Image 1 (cartoon, helix red, strand yellow):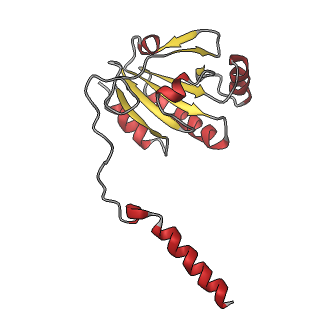
Image 2 (cartoon, rainbow, N blue to C red):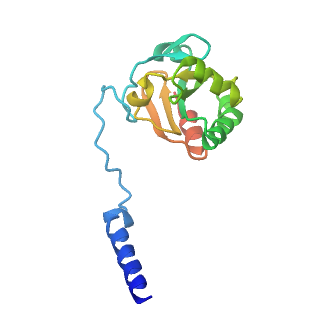
Length: 178
């Protein structure tokens, strides 16, 4: 019993020590400053251009998505229950509140456009346009993963690129679009 307690304390010590300075975060943003007029996935950069198939058989580009809209929202989904919850909340709250913003779910897990369309139908999101990112153009270009939400304004500037939480941050960013 003594040795078990000793090893538990030792394990706990190493776990805490491996956190480094993360136990007392500074609260400052330590990311590198974004260079003006550069293209990239960071907030403040110009959004990378893309041409991706949608599940209706068309091709969506950044310029076509932004045409006559205040902005574009890309939500990266794996069709899991968490993604379903996020997309349902987005469809019920943000989409109706911002008709001048174009919303897309980005399916980066299905291997073909047909598979993405099947996943879209099976999950009941026929009203939300889905981009089939079969080549991972968007996934890599925006450094995204499950739940990443990207907001691009009508000038092509990234205003948000972070994991979806409860929708409040998305709503705030959309409210601030020019």
